[in-house]
Length: 255
Image 1 (cartoon, rainbow, N blue to C red):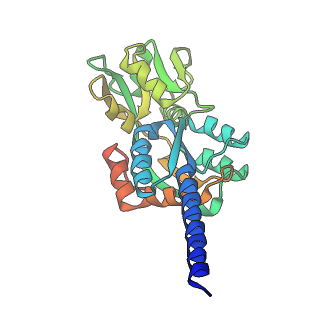
Image 2: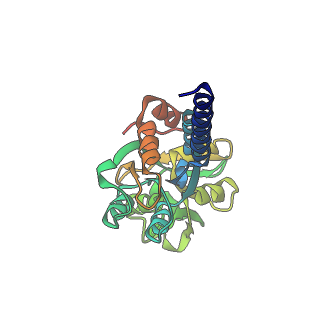
C-alpha cells in the first residue's frame, strides 16, 4: 500500500471513529428515564434523582409525583415509566397484577409513620376520640391515597371512622392534606411524619397513629417505559448507603 493510500485510509478511519463518537455522545445526551413516586417522596426523590443524574452524565431523569393510585392508573393507561415507588404495599400489589412492573425487582426501601397534626399553636386533642370535638379533619381520600387508607385503619381501630364522617375533608394527596392544615383551613389532619417535618414551623404533631398497617414503601422497575436499565440502576441507588442517607435526611427510616 502506498503512503498516499495509507494516509487516505487513516483519514477515512478517523472520520468513522469521530462520527461514531458523535453518535454515541448524542445518544447519551438524549437518554431519558421517568421516575413515578408517591407524593410523600417528592423532596427526597428530587434530591435522589439529581445526585443520580450526576453519576450518569447525559441522562435526564424526569420525576412524576402524585398519590400512588393515580400513578398506577397512569401506567395502566400506557404512560412511559421506568421505575415506580408507592407509599403502600396494596398499590404495588395492583401494579404487579396489572403487569406494569417487574415483580422480580420489587424491594422495600423506606419506612414512614402516620401522624396527626394541627395548625401551629392550635388546639390539640389528647387522643383520637377527642377529634369529635373538632369541626374539620383532613385525610387523604382512602380510595386513591395510601395515607388516607392508613388513617381509615387507625380511626376504625379507635372506633372513630364512622362517627367522624360528617367532619372529614378528603384530600387528593397527602401533600394536599398537609397544605390544608398548614394554612389553617382545617382543625387537624393525618399526614406522614416526613410531611410534618417539611412544615415544622406551620404545624404541630399531636400524636403518632397506631392500629394500621406499617407505612412501608416498595419500589420496582416499571415495564411501560423504554429505559428499564436505568430504572434498575435508580432502584439500586435508592437502596444503596448513599441513597438511604438521603432518604434519612428527609425523615425516612430503613425498612
